[in-house]
Image (cartoon, rainbow, N blue to C red):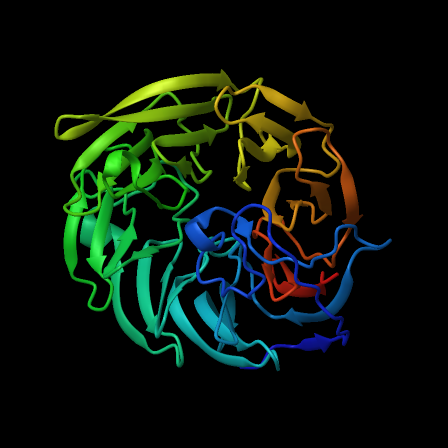
Amino acid sequence: MLRTIRTFLLVLPVTAILFWTGLTSAQVEDIDQFRGPNRAGLCSETGLLQEWPEGGPELLWQIEGLGDGYSSVSIVDGRLITMGDLDHDGEEKQYVMAYDLQTREELWSTLVGPEHRDGPRCTPTVDGDLTYVVGTSGDLLCVKTETGEPVWSKNFGEDFNGRMMSGWRYSESPLVDGDKLLVTPGGPDAMMAALDKKTGETLWTCAADDNGAGYSSIVVSEACGVRQYVQVYGHGIFSAAADDGRLLWKYDRVSNGTANITNPIVRDDYVFVTTSYRTGSALLHLNSNGDGIAVTEVWFVDHNVFENHHGGVVLLGDYIYGGDGQNRGTPVCLELMTGEIAWKADPPGRGSAAVLYADGQIIFRYDSGETFLIEATPDAFKINGRFEPPTDRGKAWAHPVIHDGKLYLRHGNILCCFDVKE
């Protein structure tokens, strides 16, 4: 089924410059998973606008018809893949769908599971010829990237006795690591599970406790020389060994009974974790302890200092940047190793803010739809651009994506593409 398409043409040259963070490449990277490479919210592209013009960057095109949902987009090999609750033949259900990036024509759409009142949350994970999604009812589906043909499926409740920590349904984006697919069913014996990515066969499960899955997505750490999967869940944060799924460590001071959402940030033997609902943030140091790993709390700050509700944070150099406060995206720059605030500014937009770093700037996309360009420096808070893209009903919670000098912003049923090349 083809969606309604509006196309606006504008082509500008791109200037390639060295990327100061060490990512170093002006080459276009495919966005194959939630928050891009390493799930860190860091875009390696350069030659991007350092200031936005009045009214914001130029709108190149707009697609309508994605359906309700907070899913962001993955862009691989000229395909744009996302999820939404769609009405097919008079019945609304949850789908994963792919579009041709050049023509914006729908290539395929595949049923995932039952619809949800405001749509899916998962961003599709693309691994070559296979794509993986999680529906809000815990339907895990593997499809062929080229055609959308189903390959295998599981259900978190039926296959792993899984459950969520609270009632907002499954939200994670699956992780591919080598031959494994990692997910968080939230079961008492399968808080996390590793599956064969080609067949769906269960390789191992990790039992943390019985508090249910959170709303975060798994990240990889090599702390203490042990490859491991770190995840926020209903009882705080925990880690499973990559080889056999044994529980390596857990930490519960950041747990709340409502929703633990934000992806953890890993660096070397450190993990930064933050949750909202009057909880706070912590930096953890991991140390080898015989066959296990011991956790030391380097610092903890309560919700009055910093708590990220959702929208994520990014680590640049020695500083964390993100929005502070429950249902607030107060811009904050926080020193990683000390927890001290470098700066905190009045929120320029309304609601929480999803963040993305690119070329010396951080995009703050508020759930009201307002979007800001903020300079990525611990020296001072500085806005270098703002605009209000086209909006739809509900919250604009889908994370922003930059690919090939273009900024992609989804709000429910619509997806807009803006030219942000310098």
